[in-house]
Length: 373
Ligand SMILES: [Fe+2]
Ligand SMILES: [Fe+2]
Image 1 (cartoon, rainbow, N blue to C red):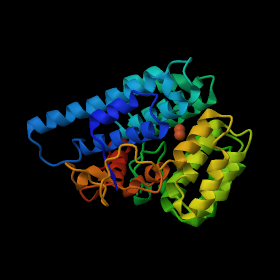
Image 2: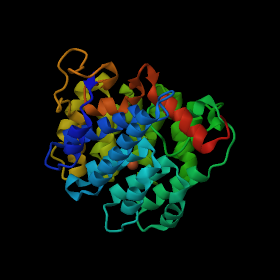
Image 3: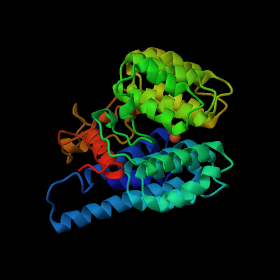
């Protein structure tokens, strides 16, 4: 278990681009954890004072992540992770900083893309005009992502099916489709690879496969990662999903994607992080990641460093359970071999025995897209 460091230490870390990248990255995910613990939806009856304190903490977390997102010295990899965390937190308070960065043409495309994904994850209709406008952005990374976010926000359906609920602690850019429930994994794989279909349809196939799980589905996704030539945005999401699934069978496809010289840096980065999450074949993954630690692309290089990172930078784990003095068990989260492993394995993250990710997934799908209660 990782003991979660106190907020002041985390704020300090993410405002300091001179700290090791693994430490800053981990700080962002610890902040997400703090936010979830202080989320009003997580607790039962609160007294008013407690609720005000929690609200203050939540808005401070967003403010600090927003400041860090704008600090260019952090580099593209880390800034896009800050945007990702802001999206996963799903608080509309983060919309204005995300919109600022997304709307700035001078900003790094990878960071703008992640801001668009984050706004889609938050799903607040206030962002719709900007997202709609940027579906015509000159950069496909931005225009395609904005298109997906708009499609999800405007998706109208009243069918809620168990297959649509993410078993992972993530808010996805498209929901799995109940229409895939009667298809074989191979048939869903055909939809996934069909570049004549709208990207949103293919994303739905991707999440249908992920939610179904298992090697057969991981093979379909791995083939799409290697064979698709239509969209790097699509391939980066496939690599991300393979990291969540953590199947040993995906190592070859992820390796092929990481070593492809002309592959987009966003795809190579996600492939590296996904390899860092596959602990069942850790020796192979470690060997592959070490090969790319000197890659010419800084985003790829840093992704390998982070994927291999297992350091306990905050040093609060002073016993077997990782609970430091003064903290209690609810202040500890599952520790994987590496950071990438614990990020991908977010579905195991628990708070007072509740599977946070699953609860969030259901609540999000219901709140944003269905008329169910
Ligand atoms: Fe992304
Ligand atoms: Fe990423």
